[in-house]
Length: 431
Image (cartoon, rainbow, N blue to C red; front, side, top):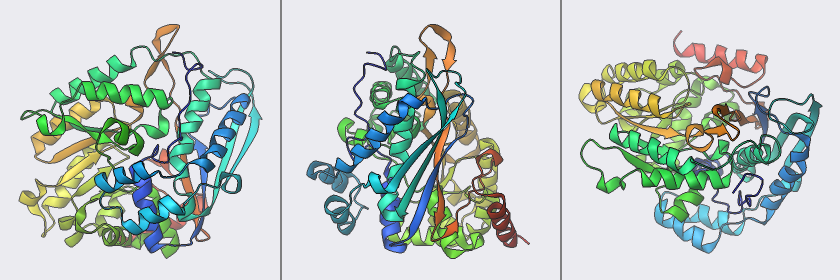
């Protein structure tokens, strides 16, 4: 099967999306109901991959088709069984009231540019905006990113096939298992297409023992962030929160210096008992996060997630932070976990696992693009087929511009004025 012949099943299920979009949707409904916001699309590497103009009608139609998608009774049973932290009230609303309304919520404009590498025909920069009430539009992000990738590889770069994808995924899985790494598949948003994610997950499963059957010292595939594939392949759904939870909270508070603490407290109120207790650290820099993440917060939360900056430096910083917190200390720190999820490949994950083993802290890995968009050109096997580097970020919330600083300046989002304001606010944390 070639990319042009494959039947697209993308977004034909409401669960073809990442778990953390649903957990955040529940939290938003509880804490920030009826809050207006908008999201905007950014292509971080347009010189590598931009949508050809002939991809736009297909993309737009697939987005419009989302209006027919809804939670089925069978899918609800899956969520009730595998995600017990999703409440009956929320699932009732999701099944019976929530519907995508793309005709009114999603707008796509294409600005023509000179044809670039990999595109057939004219291409341009796509401007995509998603506008509405936060809880009603929060599920679009991952689905639309997946559709944009599929549109590009259907109508732009077609020099690739599925050949070898199962074997490559199985090999990656076996290497990670041998290294003792616990890893999840996080690749929905940047997958080459739906079929690629299915093939890759089947390869990862083939290369890993079941979580309960791993021998001492062995790693294993912990699950997938994609609820649909977790459902049909009988995997554990993996995920907690994303940057937008902190970004939106900061905008609503109008004070980023309080956003990390308030975001964590409100999250724990929605999901008590630390059932989803991995905290994302870098929305306003890890330095600002750690200024709030101390005492009871550091003690009670299961661990932290790394998503930008040097991961080895991050590990040292987190260990030092835990060891010097009077409510944690070196012994309790050994029970804490770091989840790494930034641009990982097999080699880097193995090196991080080795470092964590030496330093005495638990780690796991969420691996995305390296699993679901790792291809060679069909006619030049030694040449990589470029993966898209695209994001959709919360732009405004409750009338206030949203900002993400990150530990990597290339991942910053927000206008210069808004970024400067947030930087000034967080400086109060250590002044």
